[in-house]
Length: 258
Image 1: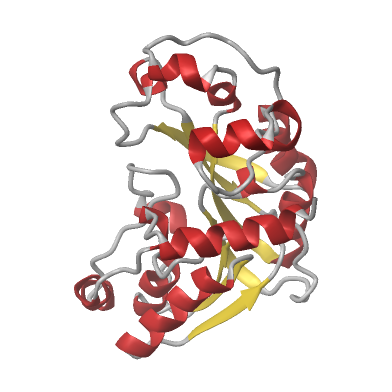
Image 2: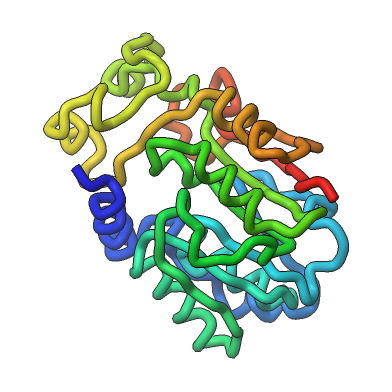
């Protein structure tokens, strides 16, 4: 299976189905960002601390990595950054262009694989904003290596990702209010569940892979980053039993050394 093509089409369908992560921000949010009133999320709920962005965002070269959908990129552009949005889905990128045209913003959009940023030269960006999305690629280590390469010295990587523990449990039992371990880690849709069962459970959603904390956090360190902060988060899904016992998302702030 060509996972890149599969997930591209799956995310295009998510746009058609109005998945919450594909809905562009409002003109009011853009107007507020232009006045300096803005906040973004790397994970479902908690706002990223403004201190995480470093000095003023105005004039900074920002890469929104696997971050299409007309949400983070337009806000950062309205706040004064020079923004490039890189995403696998043409429909997600179209959402960013739609907001840019609607609100008079300049946003550069590029389609591609988050694990291959060869379209960009070394040291192209001051900041990378990478919300929960690397669960849609089988190997996260190239993502960190490429992020390190395209950042300038002193550049900042802001990343969100899922705690791999959330992939352990039998989804049928979760619906019954039971957390029962079913899958070994790291989990992968392409090997640990049949396509028929996956479609019956979730519909034609993108394929997912869990990644160990050694890959998510250790991978950033191995790429050369200095990890300087992190927090955990939950989501608004009251039906997700896991939320009652743990916060299933992690956000990290990492720096490329000078």
